[in-house]
Image 1 (spheres, helix red, strand yellow):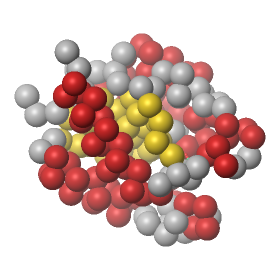
Image 2 (cartoon, helix red, strand yellow):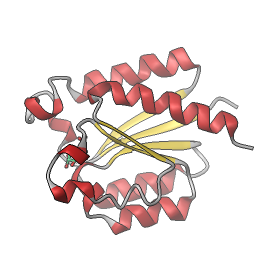
Image 3 (spheres, protein in one colour):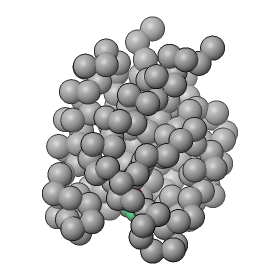
Image 4 (spheres, protein in one colour):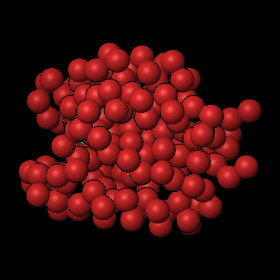
Length: 148
Ligand code: DQA
């Protein structure tokens, strides 16, 4: 079976490219989607790319991923720092999730140092800009490959 990953993006990430480029860079979300599609091809896996500004839609997407995708890469945006409901969704599905951020959240404001997602994730990648997405895909593919 071909490995399939869900790459899920949360609030305000649709504005990448023009949103605080000094923090998040100038790469747009469609450009990141292309980067991920190219990397999926190179790895020989499938990747589905989604974005929503709505917490419930992100939770629904995590629920729906069970049985369809083998793992999730989640940039939950600001919901990372607030959403117990997203954390519970990850625990509920038991899917391996990598928490991802473009910026190094640990070098930023104190409120970004708290992550509910990290409590349920297998690992965290942050601070590498758009390049973090293919890094996370490779890491999750390797994790799944090693899984019994
Ligand atoms: C972000 C970091 C979050 O703190 C912030 O709220 C975002 C983007 C990142 O990718 O660096 O929306 O997840």
